Image 1: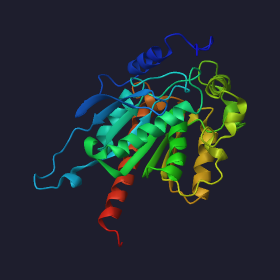
Image 2: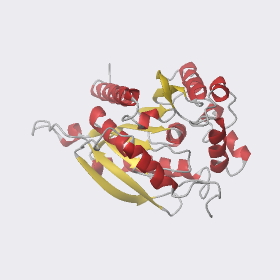
Image 3: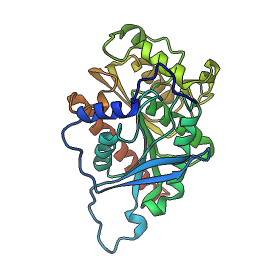
Length: 313
């Protein structure tokens, strides 16, 4: 399918280059970075990038299983129409080291060439692959989380819903400034109309590119707010930004998770726009939000580890 005529030229490279310039200096060093191609759900190959944390080796006598790290499967932002593995490189490096986890970043298919549900299917397939190849990756299959920013946050929420019903079991979901509902009519969408920032018009345009037809927005895998129930989902960290038109729908989703009995940490960062999380070189709160996200991930991984060690507790 040809690229929609309104989609920006060289969209993925331009976005990734801009985010690199907005990063905090040189890329943060990690233990290792490995490029892989894995099977996709539609006879497609999925590029993934595997990040190993800077390691602190346990005693030699420690069993291999005890040395396996938790894993985060991460989905980049870009409104489902832009982005690539470079887009989230800085985020993944920071979270990998701070949460002491293996991070697998997924290059899912983009709209409008590949509309919903292609990206959801790719992201779920990659999450299943991580669980199935846990031993090869040195990952604990009982401690896998999903996460993403913007459209990636939407995909993480969708994968969490799919995984609840079909596997694999997940321990946490990290949702950063997520798109939640194409039909949202919230105060933050109406209030934040700065033409120099993300506002309701590009938000609507991205949804139009992502959904092949408007009724696709009724699916909970496109609009997690439409899920029949959110009960049984893994705990969540929801990060929002004061000047983000998506702020209210992200916080509404957090409240719905809480009402369904799902533990949630929600944090709004004031005086910053959508995308601040990916730009720690521009926004000091971007660095703080990444540290907060990593701490929440680490706490969820530690709780899962403790529960496994004390099954009768």
